[in-house]
Length: 126
Image 1 (tube, rainbow, N blue to C red):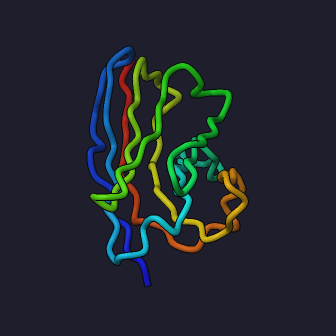
Image 2 (image 1 turned 90 degrees about the vertical axis):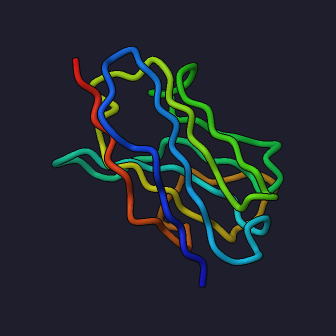
């Protein structure tokens, strides 16, 4: 069993920055690709970004390209989401997730992820 705990959410003004962290338990962190997803009120969960096991490959949703960056530190069993130039439409609960599937990269399909955190709220004011 892997536990994921997100932190770093909060209220930020449009144009500002925020850094989310996701700490994981266990000694198998490097065996998981990691992803960030978000869900806004009344909307379905959507893919934000993911990173491969080694950190060499990342994927980003078009809506966050050029603004968000995902990174991971396998020595600290943690994954991060740097959010820059945030917009009101970025307001959502952000979830990190761990994925055992392996193809050298990572997947945007949330249904295949094995473990999920409880989420952290990000609110962007205009």
